[in-house]
Length: 201
Image (cartoon, rainbow, N blue to C red; front, side, top):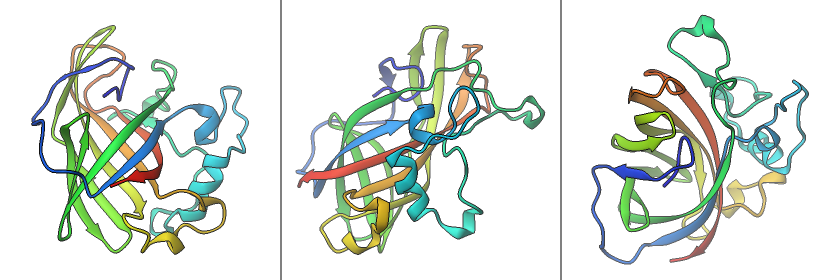
């Protein structure tokens, strides 16, 4: 897994093996300026992914943002922190295991996060993971902000308009909880878009 700097997660509270997943999703996890909506020159992108997220953005989170992937620090006066980190995209396979309303998400056989599925809405969070970056070691955790999921076709109608063709659309908030890398101070949060399609299960 590569959530922050594109390197390999070294350790976490996870196990390998286990039962066959109930559903497998091929997902893209991105905070690239082209996908999220605000380009490097300050102009707004018009990406297909931005349009899909705009379609499903819940009103309780406020107006549809210009940029779905902000980076913020505990010191809000510091402003956007993307000047010190890289925006990037990665492709992964999310293996979902369901037990009633309970959901676990596995990546490469390891339990990455656990949560609850209510109707077509998935909430999940991860334990703390350790990542070796170019600047040191970073401990981080993930929490979903808003995720619409179609496990078995029952929620296909939830993906309307520009969101059609997807089976998994959500935001992950990555929070740095421990660090000796100056590019990722403790308290920094990075939002990433997660867009996927069901591949099996």
